[in-house]
Length: 80
Image 1: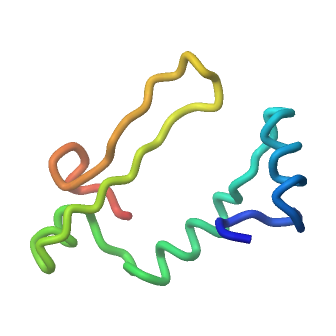
Image 2 (image 1 turned 60 degrees about the vertical axis):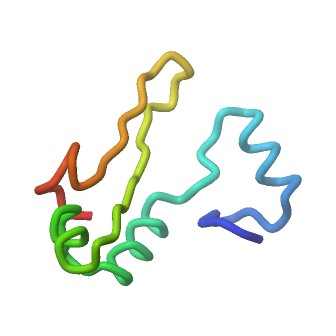
């Protein structure tokens, strides 16, 4: 299965969780993966060292929640 799910064996299980409003992506797994790829580095350092523009979109769980895009311009000193 593609993604960072934990405890879901099939796409149907993931769909059921999604329809119930439950978490389908494990943030701990995603955090570990990103840290293993980047280490303790900021968005600005990634851009300065590699010329890469890394964008991470974040939002709340509610539909009316605004989303934010984090990158070297909007959050340069934030550790990825």
